[in-house]
Image (cartoon, rainbow, N blue to C red; front, side, top):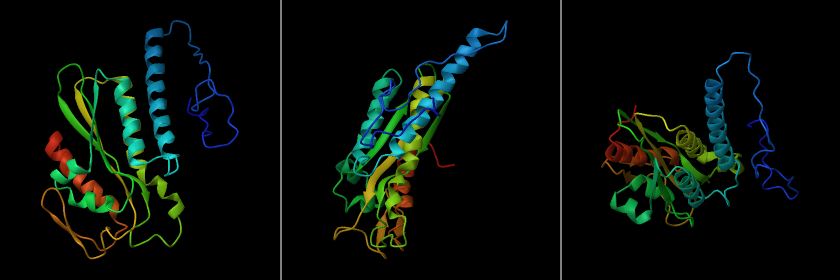
Length: 246
């Protein structure tokens, strides 16, 4: 399934794929030795399918250009995952006003210049049985990173659509968990998604920001935006999920 994946949706001439724009794979046959446990083999296939599906979700998000994969696009992807497993998955998306109430000064400073609205995305998986453990996965969700006033002038700015790869990986993991439905563990998938752009509202080198836990942060380089968004996301996870960073 993974090897048959084709990234063709942004090409002018797209081949007709039976699996939508994901894969041309139509049928899978598994040959087993005589006397093999068919049920066990079936479970292995289902697990492999779920893992491949999650990897494809990550690829699908990361390959998209920044005019397509915006913070809203990431939130919509999370919503699709939640809708597909509504018995165990729920979604909460915090908007700018919500983040202001939580005093997420670091995250808000990074997002200040963008015309694209920020989206603080929180997917939650709750197993049907008792919860023995809680885990939080946090992924960097910068859908484009210009570097801010410390503009990326040394090259590679055209690759900065990949700065949301952490969020893509986290949501790919969420898709896998939604399909496998592990017992005994509650899992939170979090991303403080936004763009790091430039205009008069933006943070400046030398600014002092205040994170949601009251810690102050001096900005020596506006291209260090990832750790600023992750700082408020980590505080949120500790307070809302009850998990300390490890």
